[in-house]
Length: 110
Picture 1 (spheres, helix red, strand yellow):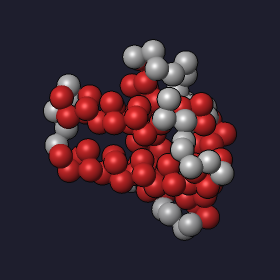
Picture 2 (cartoon, rainbow, N blue to C red):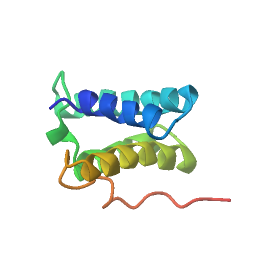
Picture 3 (tube, rainbow, N blue to C red):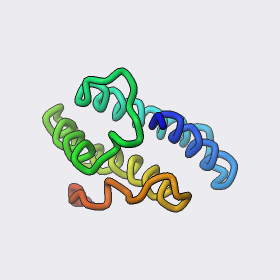
Picture 4 (tube, rainbow, N blue to C red):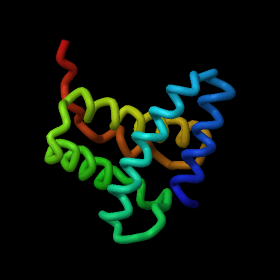
């Protein structure tokens, strides 16, 4: 299955069940698109499949965000988007496990 198709189902869930504001869904979509662009380049594939959504890929994305100069808060929120998708997919039996669960995220700075 294409990861983008799974993400669209997740967006439907956000809109319908969570009653997320349109701006929230737009933010999630923007973060996801950044990840999928990275994933396409890493996998050297035109389409990102759910089988590509691994801990190793998510960790590589985290490090790539750091190399881009992203702040810790930005990295944390982008990983949170992927984690939310993973958690939702596991709860619905679409993934065996959440690939972001094994990643140590940047600490929150208050």
